[in-house]
Length: 115
Image (cartoon, rainbow, N blue to C red; front, side):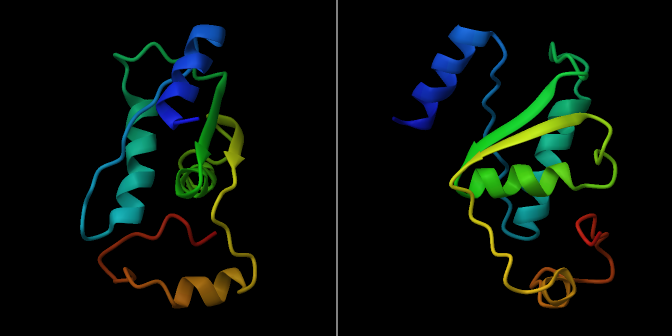
């Protein structure tokens, strides 16, 4: 089933699905996608009940949702759950090893995902 069909069905059943594409930035693309999630949640023009936010996604989108849920400004505040279908995750290296090997790592960027 295509993702668009799934989200359309979820919306017609629950009235609560919002599908939004991510920015296609070349530099800092991963962090940009996580920031897209936070900007949606901060957008006061969208009818979002912030006491009932659950992120969901497929594959790499599921990975982004898990990362977004760990962002410091959202952690334990807005996001109540994450549902990821076959997310791309790798628990082999430790968080410290992952942090030191990130290709976008630069002093001028704030790394929200380090904790």
